[in-house]
Length: 183
Image (cartoon, one colour):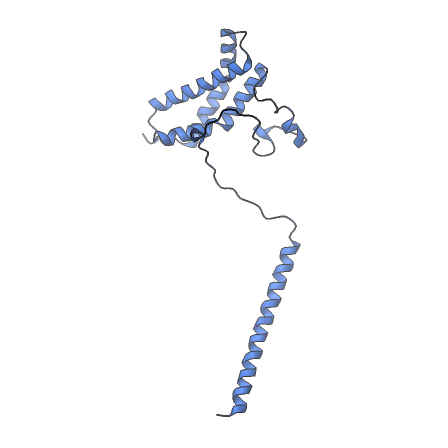
């Protein structure tokens, strides 16, 4: 074999590899430029988060958890409006007690119901749970008035806790007699 031919073949092979690498470098540079021109940051997707409150020991609960910018679908003009009345840990008036109960029904009861259903192997649809929550929420003003008539001197936080207990007790009773959606 001719030595000149093997050198020529080797050089030709090296040239082809260099051309391929040059094309790859150009493609990568284009991608980098595209990524740098993107104005919005990539979106973060958070999958379902399950809370197991029965495993926690809570001695003092303070503050407010806000999920999203407008809780309960309220129309707020400034993000500061979210925190203006949320620095109190217990309701001071019956109106605040009702407001806190409504928030409790939206934020805590669904997780509590899910945990109860898992613990007791009860099959119930999310739609059914939402209807139960909506039904209880409609009754909150009457229950607050009922407890207020029972003890006119009771502070709002006492009424709040009494109704919370009643809500969980009522849902528990319903679940004990209900056998699931698949019956």
